[in-house]
Length: 494
Ligand code: AMP
Image 1: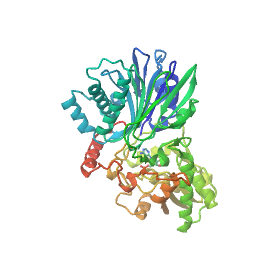
Image 2: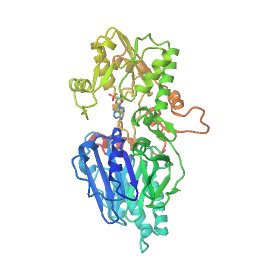
Image 3: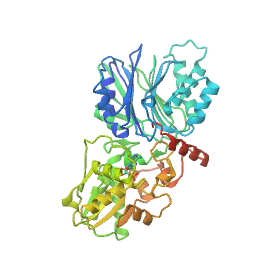
Image 4: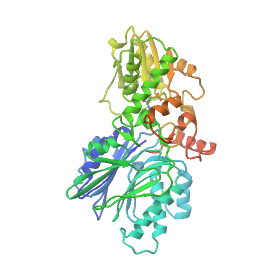
């Protein structure tokens, strides 16, 4: 999924960027990077690992720039060397550094087009290198022959037009932050607004410091006051000492990824005006209603699978009037775990991450609540562990409906065979994970739980992984096959 951040102010922004990245770490633990610009030079640092691991051991004092961007990369299968870590840079038509969160669905054809028609070479497997080169190509066509300085109104206009051109050529999902030398900080969100992007401000000496980030928690943590979400199809240019310059450069066809509410985002964030925490609580309420409707089993304890499902489990327990118990403890200090092949290793992996609290499990009928069941390995291993700890019955509820369709927009589930529910009924999934009963969230319940109650007007989400409806309208079987085959070979940082 990845996380992006950008800041511009009167003085150095590196501390805000690195500290802000710590609040986006949940969006990607594989690699991280920053780029700053001081009016003359860009400084770039990227490496594999967690934000703390990377930036605690490097001297950042030479990052004196007043504009900068940062990125955390989501772990991917197979690929993902440091060469693919972000930000990326080009030197022409202006120095531009860029980072994104998202996934291009026409990466390969754009990469070839850039080489064959634009004389631009893309050497990484990272989508943002393509977005950056498409943007630079558009900008260079629009400014060829012009001697205007970078901050001339004609150049500013060309920057917005270049974003329109980027939207026309780049298919898929992407929220982008970029530094343009001599101009400022640019951000834009694709017309479908699948990935979140938000900005805010903070007093800075005699002026204002602006920050853009994937999630509001990064702004709030650095004492920025949230202004608003960047709209789908909108670009905003921030320049030192001037108010932001927003422009709707393409019509908004907003379809925010609903999986942000299920799993990805931090519960203290608000996305497109929706509190993630509240949405998760409502997901628990609807589960409780369905549990009662279907005459679910009597249980002695409702137990969350930490951490994303906790608000839903709490609410479910409250509505069912059953005790909420922390029956599984997560080891917070284990850091990244690796996807290990083989059942024995996988089981060991789960046991490293989660430990059963015997007192809350032994002899009890327990209801485990998880945010989602993707491949089913986690649920299967947890249920087995809970049974071995002495549970009498193990029931399972999932905040998310059954997942059956590949995500082509950046969530790490892009091949059909990854889904346990792909060719199985709910009861067959129950048998496969070894639960006594299984309750999945229903699609329309999920949508109403994620919408703020009493909200007027239309609210559309991307839930293609559940209903197979891809909002961009250009996902053919051939595109799915191509993404799937690329994915099986190597993953790209998203
Ligand atoms: P599994 O069913 O074994 O694939 O694992 C599902 C668990 O992984 C859920 O409990 C989620 O907390 C977590 N999860 C869901 N989606 C993702 C994802 N795209 N990347 C990493 N972890 C995920």
